[in-house]
Length: 133
Figure 1 (spheres, helix red, strand yellow):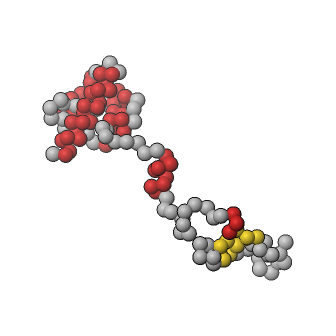
Figure 2 (cartoon, rainbow, N blue to C red):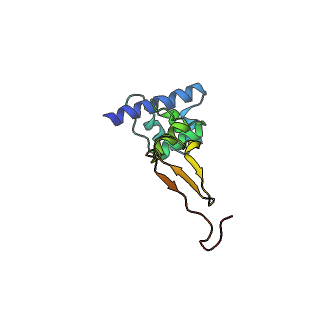
Figure 3 (cartoon, rainbow, N blue to C red):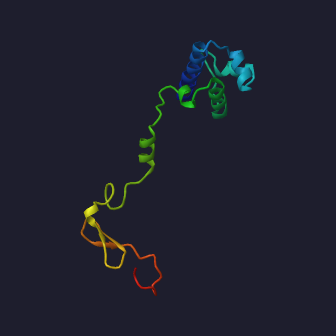
């Protein structure tokens, strides 16, 4: 039942965009390459059949809109929110280290204190047999 409700909402969105742009289903069938009979079933007013993802993408391209514009109730995530959702938080807590916690040691390597005041050392990139610069 949920599938038929989504199909009806998507069909309504496509029909609304067609009406707004003053285009016909016949035009959409030709522009998308979806046979007219199939498109008519997908956009039926009372009982539309479900669109495949490929059909949805093809229709979106033909209409010059994003796929999300055809999916009612779908909100586009903002790029920062999307990255934040995929990026795990840093192991030592939030954000970058405090500049006061980064120490330049005598040998040119960097040391950083973590939140428990333990000194973390980044190994020097120079081969071990060479004197420090």
